[in-house]
Image (cartoon, rainbow, N blue to C red):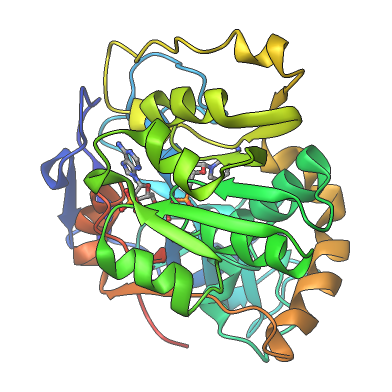
Length: 341
Ligand code: NDP
């Protein structure tokens, strides 16, 4: 049973060597006798998510889940297949998804509280780590619940080609908004315009003056900013927000690996332009999950929304995939395929 072990707490940017892939751990490929409610699963897809960086810190720094324990398995959102089960609801052959999938080939799952059974299998199963999973919920609740988009609103999305951003832009377009995204390479910028239907996109790494870049794309200002990166981008956005603008603070990935967080100089614009800026956590909205599925599944099936995944094969490539999020290596939702069904 191949596994990915977290070596030790991380300072600065995470490295592949902060994790070690072992193949010598032994798991009994059968369920313990006299123990009910246990599942033996084969892990299929693992999700690489930026919040996992917070779990690599020794001290709690605002991450909403506890730190990993050095010497223990990495875990996160994932999709698995039930190989055997003594659980009354999850049966052999079921596909399941949950937030605590261990980074290993096979798992014995005793705590089944937050698992869901995958009912709709006429879409790629890996989608349950992305568009139909936590990132999808994040895009959906962040835009609808926090920003209340209206037809004609101007919307700016940072880290726009990623797991969350590509969906925020597409949802906003369906709402009749004018949408601009920023991303860190030409390939990603092309994807935003050609594949996801953003009205405009720019490479923030090639813009010496972010304020000027935003003014160019939003001469009349921004109604909605979907914040994924923080730092200098947020500061430039604040100056360009319209009166009664809304900012959904989803994440600030540019700040996750630096000790001294960048200062924001332009917060007073919140007052001047009566801007509402609100943080949110997708897990708080899981009661909306079935409504979300009902909305998004038909959009996928009718081809009204598309989703780009960056799938690496093999558990041994999982550490590189995870750390690649922080240098922008991923193009689309980063997934690790451990096995195919
Ligand atoms: P992505 O798929 O977008 O991957 C991360 C991307 O962030 C990279 O590809 C890179 O793209 C960009 N990035 C990395 N470092 C920097 C930097 N220093 N400055 C600017 N951009 C950078 O990740 P997700 O879509 O999964 O997550 C996006 C954001 O949403 C993150 O901040 C995450 O923490 C947050 N989040 C919040 C949730 C919530 O409940 N509030 C839930 C899920 C995610 P590029 O090449 O464009 O730079």
